[in-house]
Length: 250
Image (cartoon, rainbow, N blue to C red; front, side, top):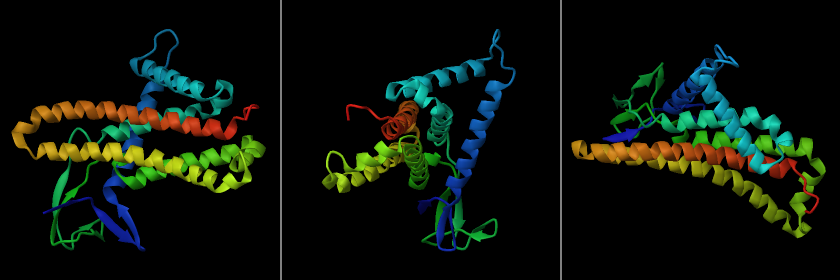
């Protein structure tokens, strides 16, 4: 029997209901964490969540400081904090458990018919949002759009000039480079998280013999999820610094 994610087609567009549900859930979790961190904030007696938030702020500041002057990068502090918290939660949501239901051809959800190839299928409702290539691509698109906007807004002359450096003939190669950067950013995130969840499914198919391996792999997946959050934010700030910072030596 097939193991698929719940999809509906509206106006020729495919909507993955599991991805949408997990995106909303991730947003709620991050919002609640942020609210708890600032509730009862105190200078003399900070809460554990406040200490955690202060650590995240300092961590993101260090990331920005390694890519550009902190004064120039300070406007992107909230972007980095939001992104690293969202990605960390999103990368780990598919690890604890899964929700799978059986469905027959013609099954509906909220009045919409679920799309499936065969007569029966196992429907997976729970996964990490970033294990969906469309979600990783959307995050990448946000980063790239912001990067180009900031480059044009804060460093227009030199930002446009870099497309024809060192010579005008390099323009096509520079355009290809600008396209390749976001693709690698999104595919790296998607590939690592998706592969991790596929491995969990394979290990669970081993039955009781797979429990020790599952525990080890989930621990490793937490590490990978944290690293991918860090890498995504780090590269985001690198791309931003390349767009807005002009070095006289170049």
